[in-house]
Length: 185
Image (tube, rainbow, N blue to C red; front, side, top):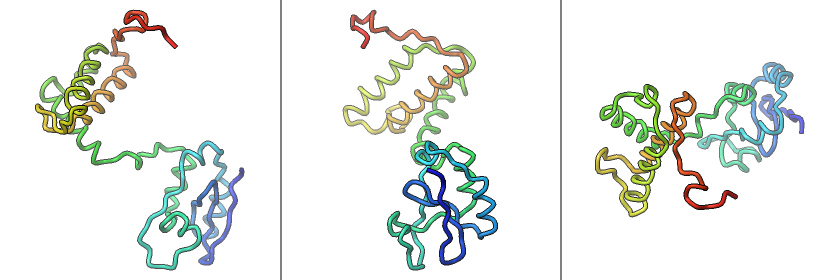
């Protein structure tokens, strides 16, 4: 489906795609953006429109449908068109806890220590199990050492493992299905 452009009562041009709209710039700017706006179906599906609540104006039908006011900042449209990573989807309060866990680890083991020497998968399998099985799964919501939520430790450890894989510092010594006596599916 190609983008479908329409003009609202205030003279702003909107690009309709999927279930929502982006745009809202002045007509001249929006027409220029429309010429550049060739967003494929996968991108439209991956990046839904943003709607901001709190407008005192009478809501439009689209605003009623999405429960707020359309984000008409052209930076949003450009970010969609450029396939920028949608960092706004990350819950910042969780990342704050993860950052504190990483700082705690840096104080114990050295900052970014996993980038200096290779790390073994089994070390992190153990860490995952300790924080999930021995803390979170049994109702403990505060790690005894760091004071942070055990799942923040799990996320931090997963980030470390992924980063070490990316940097070529990962030793994959995980038990295979063959070693533990299970057939691979």
